[in-house]
Image 1 (cartoon, rainbow, N blue to C red):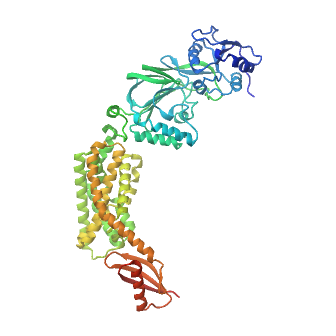
Image 2 (image 1 turned 90 degrees about the vertical axis):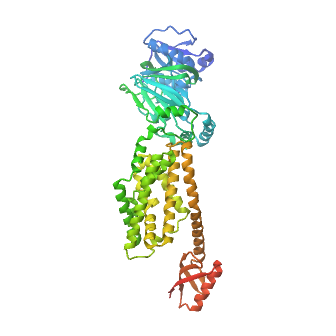
Image 3 (image 1 turned 120 degrees about the vertical axis):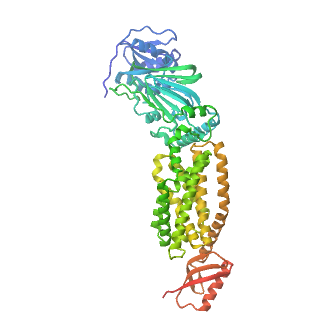
Length: 629
């Protein structure tokens, strides 16, 4: 059991409108302890001696904010009780909601010296909110999916009216930040709020610091993603919003070109400038049971975490209009990416060497019918780099990047076709292997692979942390093997092989350029008005290519339907297995016929006729016979 403390000169400062509750419920809780109860009178502070006076406040938030400067000046030992209108201070100082428990905490708790945050001289009990901070505000977190869903739809209604405002932040050490923000949250400490405590774990009520969290989403899409995370309960951890900044300092000055409207502990105020100051060890507090205070806390160090906030050109663009649907990155935000894409658009000796080696390797793998060799050629192939640069050029309508990447790509394609054609002409082989045949009849599924690979390729280039996945993207889209098959068609003089493989290569190329361009647009690397023309041209090319792909897909679907109709079918005591179809007129059917005895010519003709009647078209039958005894 905790040791009980005895205080001399014990005072109760209470709300006179709660006289009856004080007399009937509150005073009996103090028992026989000597206590002087005094009603609070606005503008007439009590004249109590400094030092050892212990003042117990039973007041609302507004009255307590008037008492705290006096308590700080007089050095009173201060305790708080849960008044019905003490909402902000109850959370900020961890006061128990139950009166008997709160009274017990006064006599069993340990006295602590704590800091006090002042904004333009007015004490902050819990938080100050500028603009809109959504679920970062203390007390905004709701439990239960239905409650979060209601809150989510309420936030959705406000999205179209949101816009960023200009702010200037200046810290105690003279650091200055000019940015645009949707909202700012100011707190002295985060120990009493679960959400902000998870985001900022190194916060204390006695470290001489305050925290400013600045929200600056660059698009409605980014904000919607954050709100969806709150709906699905993803914000319970310690993940800091990617569009937020954090300033930790002892003194902070916030200014704006126009008056700043803000909420201080729920009270609406407006000022041209906010001077925020944390007064170290200002209050001699008997804290509530829900507030954790470390005994020995070293002075806090100023922190400036502002990488996600818009500055310079990005700030100017965001302030010029309402929040855009898609993000728009300023040129200064992706200089490294643009420089890398320009480098990828060059036909360097390394690029040309890898192009030759990967095509030769792919051609040999196709003739050898060896998937591992072909996969090795896919990884080695350098074609993905200029194609992604081409996509960025299309998205941003950058003529220099477009011309450079197109020239490099064309040179690589011509070199690849030449190498494959030469090798095919030299080798004494002219057989369509399984690997070659698999690249002669592209369908819409191949376009789907190209589109997904284009998205992955653009994202991997834009995000350095996933760049290691580029090898997987290269394998997925397989650019060099169809190019090598087209070269084989040239070397053989077989135009059907050349056409089928070229269609697959063009499918991959157009799908990647379109998908990667749209990805760069979504990630904010190109404004829509600039990307529209190039993407429309690319989309038209994809639509044109999709016509033969659709026909190929319908043919594949028809083949699968025929195979499912015939596989396992028993006709004339003969079972059909291993059905394979080669398109053409008439249809070529290759299958295995299984029976208990020898199959006569008459039985074979009856099986052929039964199949033709079943599928409704003439066939050329190639049958392998197996006897099972």
